[in-house]
Image 1 (cartoon, rainbow, N blue to C red):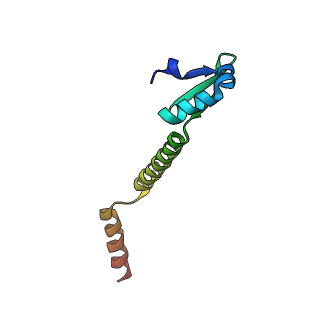
Image 2: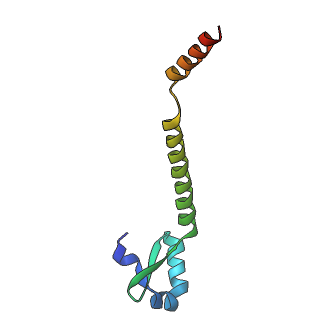
Image 3: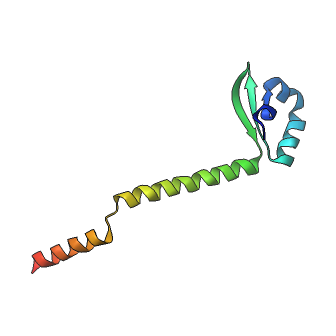
Length: 90
């Protein structure tokens, strides 16, 4: 999808809201709405929005898991600590 085809002015949105919403729903498009030549909002199909939110949630979980794995000791280090503790208790 070309960006030039997805940018619409707010006046276009006001005049063609029903048609634009119909096109968004049928083709699962996303439009950038401009005001005074500046991008202000995104209008998109709810299914596309939900899919994007699910993807972001999965990426956040992945990032959190990755961060935790950096802070987790390796199995060798963990067993070495256990052996040291067992030997000092004897």
